Image: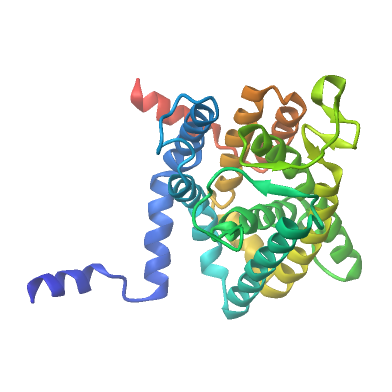
Length: 304
């Protein structure tokens, strides 16, 4: 009876209390989540790709998925207080779209180009990883948030602002995928069929590819980004999002993790253009004070 009472007292008694606790947990562990996890991920993924890790540790699907979930936690904690029922519906529809378009892509090659998963990314259903929304949705949500932050009032308003917002998010998602896809292909997460013979030292291919990624992949991301922006516009109160970002310093820490993880992986595999693009994204985060150098310095200072 006493144990049950202790458990009931420990559990949050309201949504607001749960959000407050989650917020504090993320804030108190920012360095671990946004720096240690991606840096550790680089070591484990490179060791897996180079054959330095034995089975079953090499490319362990559940380990990859759980590490990704941890890096996503600042985004979830940041968005949760402004999420409404319509937000949950929008995210659910976006998850359904992600599964649907990925299923079509795996089995037909449209719209991203013919590809297959090589590494186990956790449980799969009909050839599509069950955890796909964990990888897909934060990519577009982070791009959406950064655009709102950088453009401010220019991204809000009538049709003109909507067009600016749509174009900016699509451009940023494509920029992020210039970092993500070459790194994933180099790791062996997935591979594209017939990307063409490499030219210019492997940077491009004769079939119009980029570090082994066909240009059709980026055309597919234009479609997916446009769908995502439409659903996010419908599901979120943009003014509330901007207000939340102004008070939540860690809301884009998942994007910091993205820059560190995929920038570092591309550096290891010699995809220098992708490394430079990751640096540009990092510069954008720095401009918005989201790349917290003081936090990193304080952590190393505590350890010295």
